[in-house]
Length: 335
Image (cartoon, rainbow, N blue to C red; front, side, top):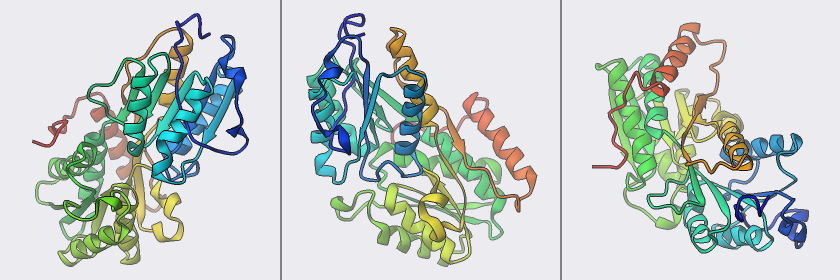
């Protein structure tokens, strides 16, 4: 395999269960090895880590992969070490999940041109050819959330809580939400809040800030809250549920991830990492190096207590967005 594709390998990293020992088998040209490095949310995050792992497991079951391992990152400081583990042990494919792994993945891909990397939710402006960024259209996902919020609100005020707008994906989520609200019902006001100041160490982890912003939005009359940005967003989703309001999540199935405290989350909109990882790996095994790009996304089905027309409208909008029959008019970068 390695000789056939001129050392078309893939890199990954960190520690995990029994795969911490050296894996010389992966250095063989007839054995195709894949490794997944998760971010600190771990393998069972009800989101891209879990989805990516499920996709890779399917590939292993179908014998597309000969060997498959994972490493769950416990601390962000371990990211580079974890990616390097799979590289050093000769893994052909290394999949890293989460924006926090962007720098480590880019560095390894640059230093290891004979390895192939898939970086999920990691937009890379100048990625080397062996790094395949797998991203999802955050503006479209936010737009879809906005169309639902505009149909759910009774007060005609909805709110969005996002991590810093300095991160393009976060800006696209919330500006997409704003655009979706306006497209669906121009009479509905969308109040968008970004975490523009605060401790950089709490990036994606500032649950207290997220909760505070949700309370502020509720005081302003918002009765539907959309949130994106890891644990920061989860703080807002929890407050919405505690207040008996509707909430819309992103990035993972937030109702499952939050458990009882996520009872207000009516749906979440996130990328189909399982499907996209399978598609990309099959191309790699066939000798084609995919270019990465935007992948498909999905929404968690609404509960039966909601009118069926809401689900019908969401499915129609999802199709229109993915077919580009409806444009969000949100730029890729903050102006």
